[in-house]
Image 1 (tube, one colour):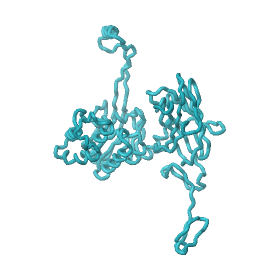
Image 2 (image 1 turned 135 degrees about the vertical axis):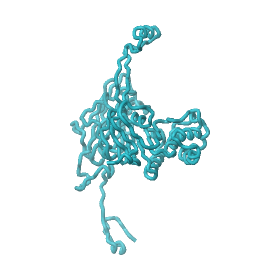
Image 3 (image 1 turned 45 degrees about the horizontal axis):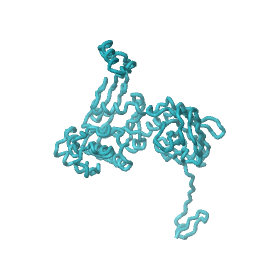
Image 4 (image 1 turned 120 degrees about the vertical axis):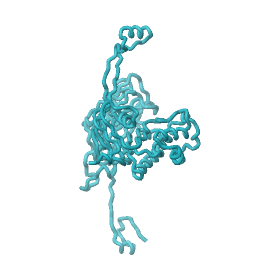
Length: 435
């Protein structure tokens, strides 16, 4: 057990609540508003109040120099937790003990003044962290070089693109010597090359400078690459805390495994999309429902849809991801020689594909529906899980673990002694020749 001197962050009984007002009879014009005010002078007429707990009774410690991933589904409480740790909002109950200077990158532009230039914002953020002007000057060239915005350094940041904004914001947060660096899901704004650059910088900061990092991301591979420990949040509570790989497996295994999965009330459904995708189910080639298959088997997917309007040339796609969240392969109507003319009312989309030689374990499926390659009509990430059963694909008794990769590949090996190599003789059937 770590002593208090070794801890960078200590959280005990942390909770945060919000009051949500549901206005059942909201005035629609000035007259109704005046009448409502006279009837309810305290201003709560027609409103039903609900107490929502974004975080509930959290307890955890983070050691100095530790890199911790905070993961969980949307609404799990990740951003609320980081805002409390960054002192942007205050908890309802509980205690937090933070030892060290905190630099936070919670969303694009946090801590930046849009009317100030990039250079001025660097000095502003450094001053907020308690650094002297001389200390900031010594870091300025490093920050500008990392962000790649030298040409626009004296331009007001309100004219920056979102990519330029996040590059400069990350460069400032990572290079101004904070003892604790808090990074939310902002790296998704940058391009893939810059994301890798940021991950490399955080690894360097953690390993060589001994900084403490709290990292929130839906990119499971990035969390595994950077963090040795992860905390899984669910509905405002700590569901699991331990080695990143173990926590990640538990998180990825959450999607439903039933033969028919309800998509209308799915926990990962984005309410901004209409519930066109109603349910999904797996079947084998003989029509039997199931979720476990072996490599080479035919997997039949049935997707039940419902649309009030006619959707011409619908494009359905399905992507399969491993336990790290990495995409393994995808199948889609537009990646086949078949075509669906339209969807209208209640319909069933039926697709078939041969399962490749995947390593046994659980895989998740992202599904989406487009109209003629336009933006999504409906999309659900981690909609359902597919289980690849243990099998004899390699013909060996040694188990193949998910950490070894996602695909099983058959191979043959031979050995030749040194004299055979020198003499040039060998097994002709091997196809190998030596000089």
